[in-house]
Length: 173
Image (cartoon, rainbow, N blue to C red):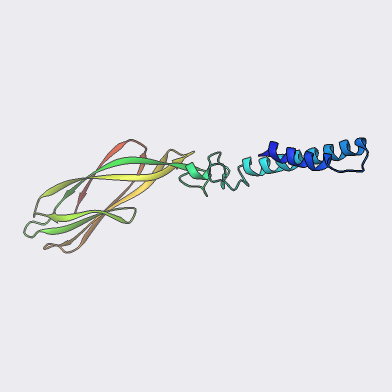
């Protein structure tokens, strides 16, 4: 493309009749210089991460990862996803009636079901969290129960999780 543009501009400059050959050479050199300067400016614009219009190059937060491959393009401390497995054991303290439980991860409902009187259940929850310069995250696991003869109950735990790890928590509701 650039070569084609230079060729066209040079052919325009060499077709000027009535001009001395030396002046034609100067015009051709000016045209070449202008085309090169414009090409360098365009290349710098497209290839500079902070101003590039291309998502595969542009880096909004300046963390060295293009927005296209950055899980948190506005946070320079996080850029990828981590996953941990949380094994939640829920014990019922109700002796007569069944109770309904809900398991929340950072206030998002992940599991729910019914629990027999005096029974227990084990649930596996996948926790997905952003990591980067810090390879861990704080998560809050909350278990609530409704029904049963003891009324509503909530139990909660906060833990620090790392990518690829598994954690066991036990709750009584």
